[in-house]
Image (cartoon, rainbow, N blue to C red; front, side, top):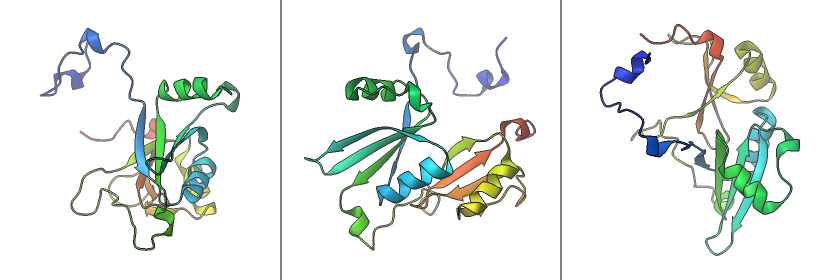
Length: 176
């Protein structure tokens, strides 16, 4: 039996040709990779899977995910293939020299004109996560008990991108 979202206008049956397609990563620009890497590895517990430098184009890509360090291949080629075969990867792109431009600020997608909105992390306990964010000086956009939508947190990363934080077990009553 199909779930109710299968009946939403615009939703089409999944073609067999897309079997095995996986949403691998989302990319955010990082003005200062040292600051952003510290934030995502310390505050959100992500592992750096792969760093790829492109000197001719003057940028570096950093791929992060939640993974056991023991499962990350040591060989560069194998680690690259592993990285691009995973789900839930965050790519931070650093354009060389951006950290030296005091005027540079990336658009967070939520200011006008709106576009990109946020990424989201699921946590086992939203109250503990909120305390952890406080302990680590994370900037809040919305705390779990603020506003009409309870049990949802929004924080900002070092470049001002919004991060939604939810506890899946508390999300059953969301929406109509």
